[in-house]
Image 1 (cartoon, rainbow, N blue to C red):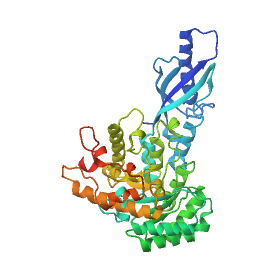
Image 2: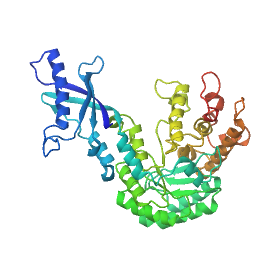
Image 3: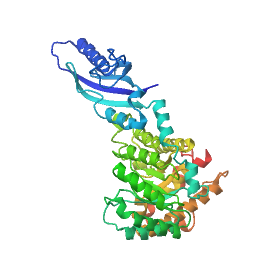
Image 4: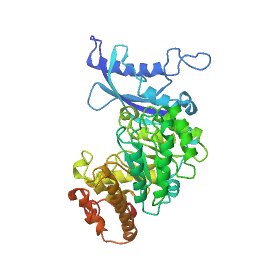
Length: 452
């Protein structure tokens, strides 16, 4: 089945001599003309291409009115796979035209006032081609956990440095080695620095050495290579050589060059490939063109991202639920969303995008150890500073992992007790600690992953 789009468009008829029904019929004709203009048609060179055709498409449904609104129509079109060869940047080309000029501004006397794509389904062939080309060098969730030697119920724990400027690499090294000693597995640059990576590689390697020496377990420093693709690939190759024998990790965000850079790294480094983490920066921006935010996440994943924020993480504060949802439904839907990634085995989803320290223990119960905890504000918000917060959060995570192990097969609610609970107000306002019983248990409570 080819790649398929569901399009909704609002039309305005500029011809003034048409009746209501004639206007409606004219809009339908405009859609059919559009698709005809984009379709295989007149025979040219035996290939069935029209000189003025932009993209070969086929109308498979509609156009049909959308609800009672007389100006809105919906239709489905399909686009053939041969237009998007994966090895030549076909996924990038597909996103470019779908988010660009695949739809016109005017057809005849009909103006396309508004248009949106409500469904984007990548063809199985294109998806399989991308996976075959870019994911042989990828890492599954069990493989990532094994590389960091993580025990059962203990998630991958990462800290993201937020500022682009103002933090020296000497300060980064000091924080990174102390967080590694506390039990953090990854320290990364959340937003890339603007320096040429080749000037910093030596210092990055020293940060990695310091983390390895001090680490409580296995730890990795992760530079952010969200830069021009050719520079990123050269830096990635050097980084892999310098960190051989470690769980080599690097970050490529899902911005304009995200697909190209991740794909190029995967095709270039096939022996001992790095773990590639990714934040899908354009996820929400592309949603109106790709049908949903999930499509951009999937494109990055099939291009080779190993660890990625999938979006719509669970929010445990009632004031931050998805509009129109109650707490139970919101958390259950988030859990099912994350669980799908974990059951598939790749990529590893992250609990990220600003979670608070008081959320971490209930998030681990809800999402399990197949989800990585990528934290920033949870450490920087502490009254005692990043390093002390890191030590506390590592203890909180370890206590929760032990709690999950002891809770399985038992009926009572496993509320946290002891020092880890008493120490929380030393770092954060006590009211921000989410109680287990407020999320789980009872007729309307969510269910912890370990109990499913």
